[in-house]
Image (cartoon, rainbow, N blue to C red; front, side, top):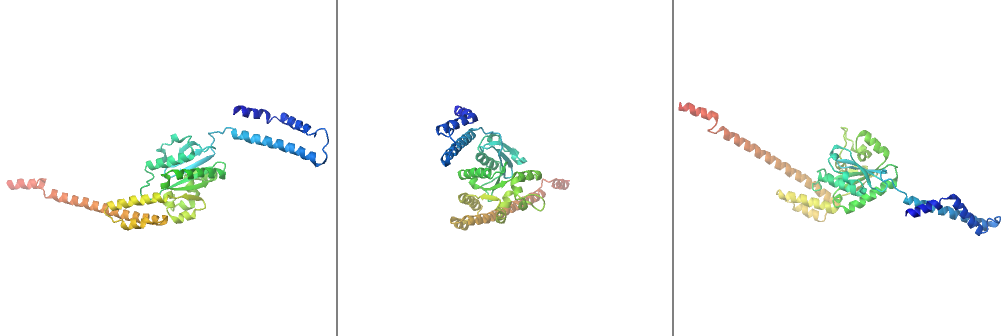
Length: 336
């Protein structure tokens, strides 16, 4: 390959040699010994020059394809916001150049081994490791949302599309990611810069008019996107890959099992779940969540009553004990 490239560089872009070849071809066509007459000779001249230009252009494009890529040059940044937040710097080959922990929660998650990986593999592993660290629980009844924001350092739409296509393909192959709601956002360099100035995740900054609360704090992504009205309000800036129906059904089945273990009849829920649509399953999930919370609160009250009862009983026992100091004193007095 190096020999071919060297030959191209020596000959294809040698202007003197290229001109010489054009003149030689013109001599063969009889164009240099006579003045062009009529349109025929002129067409031949233009044809030769057009052919030469096309050849040079094709060779230049070919060499460009083989030109080395600076593997450390960052072209795109992918921000991942769960609760731990990360920024993944990616080169033109979509390989990870650097992974930066944006907040304290992210600092405890190992990411050094992600350097050199394809961006979609790195994003998948970061999310899974956040789950292992307890920031995501795919078995509870809370919908988990992960915000993935792409920022092209050249503000190129194709950079956004390429990165997001890679992540979408990864979701199709990852059972773990299919258990989550992945929110994809495109952000500009300006938005990233402004987000850094306000010390908030860039993905949330893009929709800051909706997540900013009255006390000046920002609503968590899961809390915000679990509200259908909020999803509708920002639909022009985001794309959500929602949890797969199969994974949601499995989550509900586990929750029903927990209810039944507490002595609660879940027959009606199971009947409704059998042929439920995605929307109906979300409704069932919400109802089970409420009932589970009520059962948990009732269990806590029973525990408190039991503990208080034991305390009263123990106090009365100690008060009536013949071994108490007062009882001993009285006994001694009677003896005297």
